[in-house]
Length: 136
Image 1 (cartoon, one colour):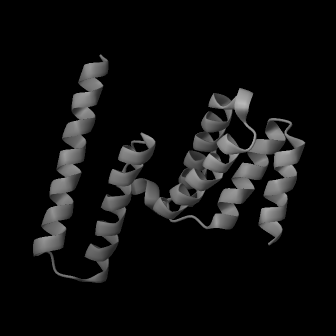
Image 2: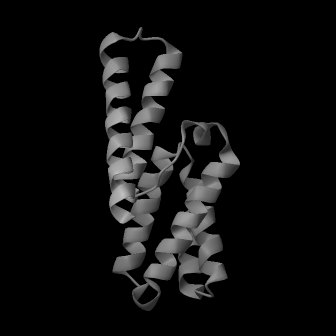
């Protein structure tokens, strides 16, 4: 089963790469095509860098983007629960900043999600740090 998923993901990435190539080389450089190109690159990067498989329609719905970011933060938090201090937390913050750029979400929204995640995990120190980041 895992092999089938990997092959499907590889095929999907090749198709996305082909679409990006066609848009870059042959498509008229209008606003719609530039937006589509940015979204396709984001879809590719989300799959490659974060193992997140998304559809283009995700970028049209802010609630879905925030929900995806929230799931990502909660999953990373739970995966690093035993060592959530310093290095793991710094990595989560950097990944969240990068992810919010790919999802076209503001950093303020991302830190709001991180703050909510810290509160849900009863992490007072992180809650304070994320609240301070939001205030700056």
